[in-house]
Length: 256
Length: 256
Image 1 (tube, rainbow over the protein chains, first blue to last red):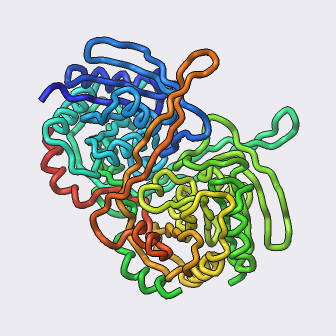
Image 2: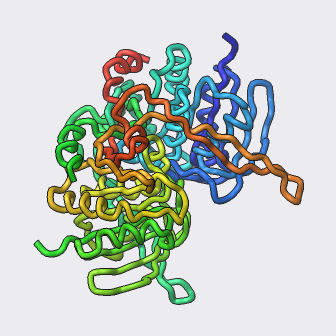
Image 3: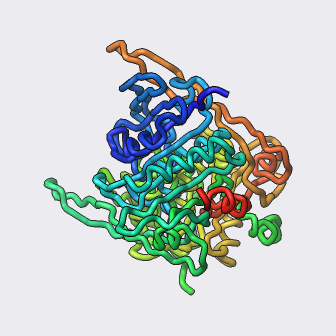
């Protein structure tokens, strides 16, 4: 087999330090195509663009390294990247490193993870990486070797169809990372609070603000792993069926 | 107990016939607050808005019926609706009727279902309704009584925490709807095709196009129910953990 074709994207944009930390960590592992948003797309969830056309701009082309920016969302980057840049499916899709945790319900809002799900739906082994720190200045030197090792493992052994990885790293601290924990998605909730302001035309407008509250009563979650300075890996799927409710709901709803 | 507080939203916008079909179907079942996007937000997935402020406009205020438009996404409508309009959680959240199926993987891209998941995360019984037909002229008269019955059932018996409903209706045909099937989310894939064009400045741009391909080998899916002229109800959750992969992944990744 030749060099694997690796598609890299993110949601913080091609300008974000996170994606360049990711690229640096995996250089040499394959032929790398970067197709990333030309501006921040954080909180875009699984949005894709149908109301406006999309643009692609070639930024850099070197041996085994091609970089494009795209005017769309992370999901658009994957779709457009595969169809118009690679003209095939990649052998591996990597997304991130996101500036901010995508543990717990954050995965649901995450453009980083939307790109990963997009890869997973097309049966491409796909991994999202996020750092539990929002600042663009965050030191990511402690995670480079882990990103490379996890990526090498996935290149070597693949992933089961329709299962992808949501990898979250603790932020850099004086203590070394303790290792990896394979976890489930922890239960939590965002409580919004809106900042109501008045514009110069005397009309109200609102800025969204929120605070996250962890509310999982049981062990084994990504949030707990991060708190204990472990890397969390959640095997993630896109089948949203609440299977345990199927039988009781048949009785309730099949005779309405 | 007084009248339940019902929050209604959608992703096709306050101007779409679908939301007015939904409102008409449930009038009288509670105190209705509509907070819906002021323009189409289809394909917005679970996007929410942090880069720009949000606006709310009161459109109509009658006894037990209050209608607002909102400048944000469906998820924004739920967050802003609860915090700034209701100033509490609703007793029930309804979303739709979407113009187009949200069966199978369409749920993942769906703003309609993002609003439902948003309600579900805050422990509000939440139901999304979609019609398997895209036209804004689609006749929805055949689904009004079903919407009302399903809504009454949920008001009466609630839903388990962290489980919501993704309800899809077959489009109107000469044959009557055969009934309801409680199903799992069928497996399918969108294959994108981009329409490449040249703008007046001679620069390339791309319109997204796609075709959906059903690829589930097993029975019991929402897509099959719709094809047989049944209403599909998928109990839906937001825990994306691929639980069956947890053990094997512990062996693979906890020692990298």
